[in-house]
Image (tube, rainbow, N blue to C red):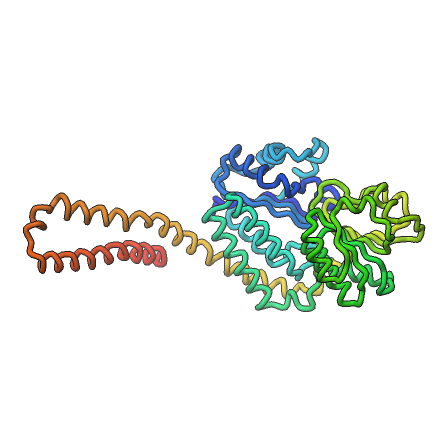
Length: 407
């Protein structure tokens, strides 16, 4: 288990606005992870980034401490200056062994989330892992870890009430928007067609909002979401010339630079001067700070949802205790599974070795004797050898499992 390491930067130790500086652009993610994987000789790695955390999950024998974390972040070459590096290193949480697995299980169950009980984190973790798996960054060890992560989260969500009347960052943002009492025909611009914006737009559609325009880097994804909402679809470049005005902007992209600059915002206003609303759930924010100081804006961001989230945590305390018991049980079950898997991997060569011995015996050591047998005797000999071969393959595995269970 000392193979499992996690470097975590979360909302608990680091301001969300600063956390955004650690987010890696999706276009460069695989290349950068492949680079550090090779440079630091890390057998397996995957990267998780959500609205309130950036984490690196690794399978490696080497020591992972804050000195390693500094070298690792510098090697990623994401432009972290020395000032922010100090902030990140002070706030970095480094886990290994059981503590690392415990952290991942707590994270998957939303116990480490800004909003305890939200279900968005599990699909986010699975998507992050699958993406890195497809890129060849992970192998059998992290596959087993993720199997336990998914199993534990499902048990917590089904065996406890932690997600009863589910509250998520998206639903909290919608509550804030609802307090503004907008008309259902309000013009809504949606920037980004990912899961977060899909979820919040569905909230709006459910409450009779119907005037949508969707912008996304990949036009086909914008078209897909726009079709669901009965709205229009554009690529991101169209923001520079869109002149139909708006009442609300909802934005959440993976961009590491602001999408809504003062120039673009002025174009989007199309001469209107009334106070608009921006829901910005991206980390780092998609909205340039200058927009908020230059124009009258109702600004809703992840940071502003903290107080509601704290109240939500108090309401779910007893369910959290129940969830932690489920996590403890899964941790205790993981180590035997891991040992069993290692035995299975080690035993992969047994069948081939036995076949080699068989072929050597028949074709070399006892070749003359075997050739002198009649057809019926040869058939009996083959049956006996085949039977023994199967038994010889299964016996070591059974014995190894019994030793594991008894120990």
